[in-house]
Amino acid sequence: MKKKLAIAVVFLSFFLNAEAQKLTKQIEKKALLFEEGFESGQMNLKKSGNAPEVVKMKNARAGKYVMKTQISPDKEVRYRTEVSLNREDIIFKPGKEYWLGISTMLGDDFNDSDSIQDQGMLLQWHYFDWKYPKELGLGQPQPLLIRYIGNKEVIVDSEVLGLEGTASREMVKLPIEIGKWVDWVIHYKIDNKDGIIQVWCNNKLVVDWIGDNHQIEKKEGAYLKFGLYSAQFKNNSWGIDMPANYSRTVYHDEIRIADENGSYQLVAPRSK
Image 1: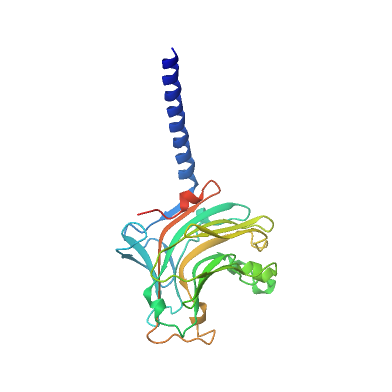
Image 2 (image 1 turned 60 degrees about the vertical axis):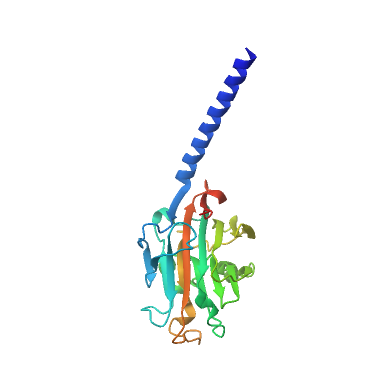
């Protein structure tokens, strides 16, 4: 009798565990709003500036293909090669939590221009600023972004914080890595009271922040762009010209976005 009871307990435990795992997978599947690893070999995302390329790479972060973005004097748009995820189903809305995972790699040409201390955004959230006239005086701050500074540093910052004067816009400075994949996971909530910014870089928590990180007037929230955007090369606006032999190349792979039911594990870049 005891043996039969033990077998029944083991069977029930196995059944319940299997059902729990099934339920977890269902929740996670629903939580995942967006996933792109470029394994189709095609660029299926909306461009902003020049269109990025999908290229085959031996050391892709996962699979065989990655997204390649590059700026150079030869490009039609000298300062921007990005994709825009301005889609209603993946807008980061105020008061709601989201998770993002993405891998980036800076190309070898970052070693070639030590004297050009430029900067550029690898990843940025944008408000719908065109809906708000300049007369309102709201400016066009990006609520969160990751940018490089020359070939020395990578910085996570929030221009909203700098605009409002609540804190420095620079949340963390990290040493730059060239020719290596860097994995990012971001837990993000835009809110004028209980905002969340948590950033992991290569599995290490480098930003852990809560507070006001939102321009409350911009009720729609923000959308994500990634690729490469270097504002100083737009009409030579910062007095920094782009040399004839200059280029900046960045690769992106393993992009996932999830809602509040997501997790670090769900969106984190996968092992090969």
